[in-house]
Length: 456
Image (cartoon, rainbow, N blue to C red; front, side, top):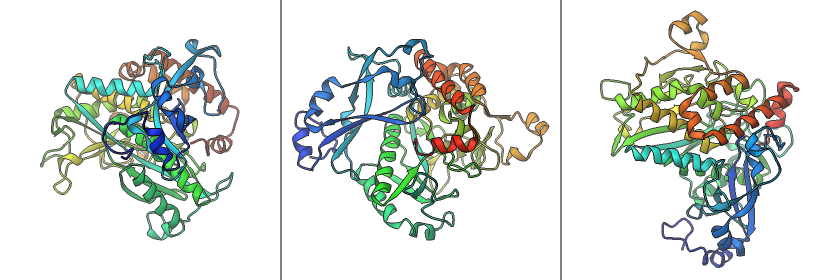
């Protein structure tokens, strides 16, 4: 028997089986409104009980800010009273290759009576996946993850010096990368590719596309796997949006596609580099609500500092065909890769986003675009950052929100994204964002970057 097997898992038999492999505890993880993983670990003998009843956690985790402060500004969670149950998702349980004494599972947050908690991000994503299925659509999603790899230290000490994209750079971190690839595979994560990237001591890997809930789970597990492999080699990984004020920073790009049966609606025809009608409306929906989406996918103060023209980070709301400066980069079909490969990449996204909420926002906006039959404007092949304001205006290109206040207004003004989160979760999310913004208002950019560096 393997935890990765597709056969039904029997909770009562698991503890004894896992003990045979030296597992002493099971960690159940979820992600808060700052993109930070939180968890509870129980002794292996309690696993069967926790699967049935969960483990108690305070409701206030929904209003933790990035710096572990608690804001009581959201009316629904304005006192220290309240408890919910964290329940591991058993079919996602994994023995951690890089932490041999532990098994790991993502969790869902439930009310004491077993009903859905209004602030559970996993439930918000599951609802959007169901909404797509109810109209005959299937969404696939996958993450590209960029991270800084440094020596074990409190400050920035790069573990490799480049060159970018070069195999020579990997030589400096060869043992780490080798273990990481083995651990990712052992933890059931399928990797498309790995390479050194453009940024300071930066590495990027891509996770295979899958259903959105599994994609969010995979992103969370990949983080744990990377951190453990780095620690084993005296290194430290950071997924922070910015490592230095002048650097390009780390993005966590989200690729998505939408299917009706066996048809990829984002596939392009042989004589076009545009998706078909429904696929075009899906992309148009993302474009229409892009400012609100990025308030979820790039929500932190360092996120906003990262979204600059000329950094492949996307500062303007537009789409383009294989345009890496575009906030929405369309990857069309090709004779070599086929129709199934076509997808849309959201670039303004990073580790300060909750992956479940990020994908929920994307699906909600894309489905709304299809429902409304939105038309997709012409693609942009250039970098509008070099255009005049008048040129951008005539092309209908606007800047993405540049302040927390602008992000909040965009989020409040988006019916699809607002509905996807629900008013309680939206209220807690905005309370946390306001707390973070107030904290950052008293500090310099360098101080802000330093404080976020090891939070992710």
